[in-house]
Structures are given as structure tokens and as C-alpha cells.
Length: 360
Image (cartoon, rainbow, N blue to C red; front, side, top):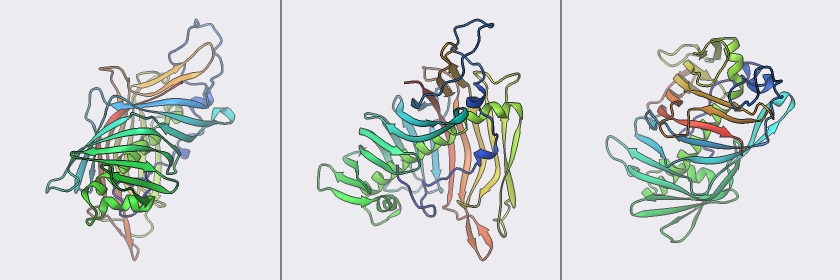
């Protein structure tokens, strides 16, 4: 939701994978893996793949796994529970060879997520926070939202957050409105002088932003999975530290994407995405750990060629699979050519969510 400064903002995590180096081919370019949805026989001619300019998307809690949880620098932990489905809409630019660029998105009114915030020593942020979208929220990808509103409830207070042209307006329990720029809204989270309700409202917006960022991080690699099955496992190098790396950290780490299937990419297949001290020079962030992508789903209408479902995990009760995180993100700070990791600059992700993109 909020585009926070890179340094000092505990929710601001930037993705470190240079996806463009993974492969030049894609599911979209090759016509997919021939997954479900077809009605013709084996001798029928398969229609060219058609990517629509608009899709729905859905996130849900894992059916058989831990909820999505983030430990913020050891200071507090946020556990995310999606109430039913977190539903939205995507606008795409479909280019030559069906290459896809995400343009904008909408988060639907009445979506709700519940946050549980805990800290070892107690914090004004601690408690159960419900975030309910009171109108559709719209945004261009990688930009702050342009319209929408949501409410933040933590007993006994309700904060209404309304998106303005260059920030937000907060209203506590129907009282006087207070306007903030995006940076001011973000800064409330770390401001010990701010009121608890202000800090919780900031945390709620940051949490929604963080979830949507992770959705796009995974969605961005969906068209890279079939090429990986041709070149399995795929290993890429990360940036090399300019100077002395932090104590015990490799000067240059790498990442490995491994397909756990065989033959051709098919529904139900799994992938692992392993990061080994992978540093990004531009964002000065270090990532270490694994993302497991379980139970690949892909459905293409054999008659029309339209891609009408893709993702990981099923939305039905008890359906397996999803996106599972076991990751650590670390801020890195340079001083006279020597890099270090501040104790409060580490985010640890665990648990995960189901992700599906579907034809409207």
C-alpha cells in the first residue's frame, strides 16, 4: 500500500531475483504445458495460447500449512490471516509472443485480513487488528494507490484510512480528519511519539502493501517455469559486494530454481527457489532461504486457447499446495567500504498463501 523509504522502514522489502536472466522463453511464448481445460482428443490441433488483458486474482490462507508470518527485526511479529479470499483484478499489457507486463490492479471492497501482532517485551502495536476494505483500492503496479479506503479496527478503536492524491487521511472513531503524505504515513510506524492508533494504522497499510508485493513477486515468475523445466535446475549469480561483505557472508551469493517434476511441466508439480546469501547492489538487501512453490495449477481452454487459470495451490477446502516462505531479508549498511547488517534490519518470513490468477 505505501511506498516506503528503503532504509529504516521495516516493512520495505525489495525482491532480489533478477528474473530477466532466468530464461528468455516462457509458458506464454511456448503455448503452455498443455495442462487441463482441454476438451478435444489427442489428435486435435491445439489453439494458440490467448492471454487476456484482464484477470481476477485470489489469495487465500494455506489449507494445510502455517499462516503467512513476518518477524520484523526481532522487535515484533505479524501473523496474517485472510478472511476467506483476498480478491482483486489485474490489468495486463500483452505484447509480442504473448509477453506480459502487469500494469495496474484493484483490491475489492469487503476484502478483510486479520493481523495478530506480538512482541516479547510488549509494544503499543500488540493485539488483533482487522483490516477491511471499505471501497475498491486501485493502483498502478509499483506505485502508491490512487483511490480507495479501508478501516483498521483494534478494540476499542476504529481508524478510517482514505487514500488521497498524494497520501492518506486518517480519522479516529469518526473524529477530526488528519492528512498525511505517504512518507509521513509510513513514518508513523516507527514514531515512538505517535499515538498507538496512528502506528497501528501505518502498520496495517504496510502489511497490505507487503502482501501485494509478495503476490507480484510470485506472479512475475509464472511465465518462467516451463523454461526452467528445460534447464533444471537453473542457477544464477547475485551481485558481488562492493567492498568487504558483512561478517560470515559470501562476497557473491547465488540462487537456484529447481523443478521437482519430470517429463513435461504439468499440474501438481512443485518448485523450490533457494537463495544463498543473495545480495542486490541497487537495493542493498540480502536474502537467504527458500520459497517452495507447491501444486502448480494451469488450465487452458483447448478450443479457444484462452489461459483461464494459473497459480499455486487450490482455493477449495482442503486443497493442497501454495507458496511457502522460509526466508530472511537483511538490510545491509556500508561504512568506509565495509558492509554490516543492523540487528533491527532483518525480516524473517514463514508460512505462506495460496495464489490463483483466473479468467474473469
